[in-house]
Image 1 (cartoon, rainbow, N blue to C red):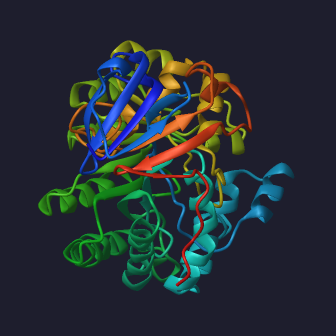
Image 2: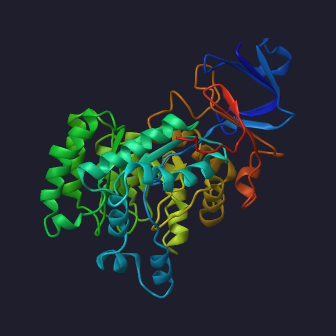
Length: 405
């Protein structure tokens, strides 16, 4: 074996926490080769004594807009002075303000501004990160965003899944012509970006201030032709039937879901579509309608949790705090929260066969924690008990830096 981590307590995340006390886990060629009781552990070229700490799968942040330029603290202040999110968006703020800043930045500048946000997530045991485009809204700028996302995965110890979110907002050059812009997304932007190998999945913003049900379906049909999986910003501000639509396309996830209907939940359950819950946006926007956690639970819909890291509605770079928010704001259990950033978050990216649980054959992506019990990860606000992270079998300290370029 290449690596053995011994004297640990494993939370395999198979059947709840899936606890194995006084355990060890062995790695060969970047994958889990064995796990079980420490007394039965095989020999390895390198052994790390875990000191009785808890070892979990590496955390997965399955919904972020982390690559962008600028910030929107002015809008935060405006909302606190009485403006609504929709008021700001209709006045030319919101997503379009970030579009202007992002279009003005080249790839190196996007990386310079985005790297500190990514590094904060990696310090908390995140080993897989989804990064969406959607602040460029032109082929050139969307390409720059997705290339920056790929670069993050190349130079930092993190697995990056890229999502094309061209249908995020209507760019100013298409004002009053949303169908023409969707034509551009479907026939020009998406095929070229997919051909360049920059797209792992396709997303859209189906909302009154975004795109209609029919326009969203056109994006999904284009993705299906290219054999790309889909996901959707659905039912955040109103019910637009998005959850049922993405389920009809066997989508990976429906995200937000504050206003999802029983019909939408039933469709997601039947399709195996994951509910990605984003407590940071709910908190930051001071929303009052919570996603129907109990109904999702009863229907057996897997519930993932993510930061939704973005400049306008969730400038959050702590997945541990997102776990705490999901528990305190919505009464999710700590076990559900940890499953939400491991096994269910992996499924929301279509990576459930590779990451998300500790099982033989899966990628050796782990986090080692100085905690007494797994619930501590959702309990202690502002704490970061991460001691060690392993990415594809390579151990590293939690804090890493952006390499010199």
